[in-house]
Amino acid sequence: MFNDGGKSISISDAVKRRLQEKDPVRINLETIIDLRDHAIHLLIPELQPQLSRLFQSTVLNYQTRYRNEMGNAPLAGQSVGMLSLVVDGPAPEVALIQKLYGKHAAQSVSKFIQRFDETSKAVDSTEFSIPVDYRLALVKREDESDLSLSVGDDGEGAIIITKTKDPDATHPYHTNEALDEINKRQATISIKSGAFQAVLNKHKINNQTKSDMRWVIDGRPRYSEKFIRWFVENLKQPKWLESAKEFRRSQLRNKR
Image 1: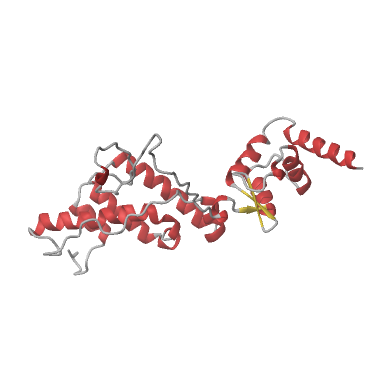
Image 2: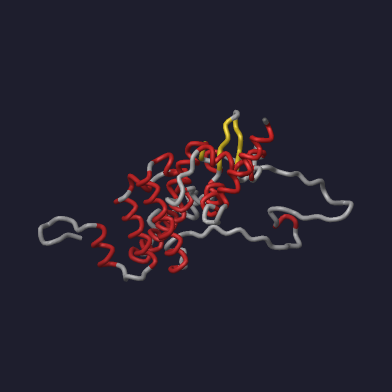
């Protein structure tokens, strides 16, 4: 499609001319166009689960619309089927993305994820994105199942599988970084190292070598996003920090 000057029109204009505003296929394409325009910030491995769902829909939409327009499949004699694009994974950790790619990229990723989730729910169509769902169903034939459940003395022995966790994702903050993050998120009190350690002692967090709040690796403690939120939220309580400081002073006096 060309304009009066003989030049091809932009893809954005072409989409608007050919597809209705609320068509899920158009919303899918416009989202990908926006991704292209902001590729420097959004095309990162951490977004692969969301992007793969989006791109898979684009592939299937192309096959369907091509067949409707031309009367035959774009890859005659071959089946596009479900290409190996869709992958599942945890929601991206914005704090980790900021650490790896910078503040501006983290803000762009956060906005994209929020917009993607809201649009997926509003559009509710596989023409926008492919959903990833897990369901359990009871079936009578064992050969139709992916897993089996058994009870009683004849049941098979169970195996406990532990998933390896990446500390950069679960506990991204070392001590100084945790202090900086706490002070960034609130301006009421400037938290120094002494006050920080007082809180750790008062609430026995220093005793935790591997928990959802603190993880010690090679002798260096690391702190989670949950810990940062917990610390900042508790600072709103009257005398919470002062009671931790007094507890620490009492400890030091008893050691003398």
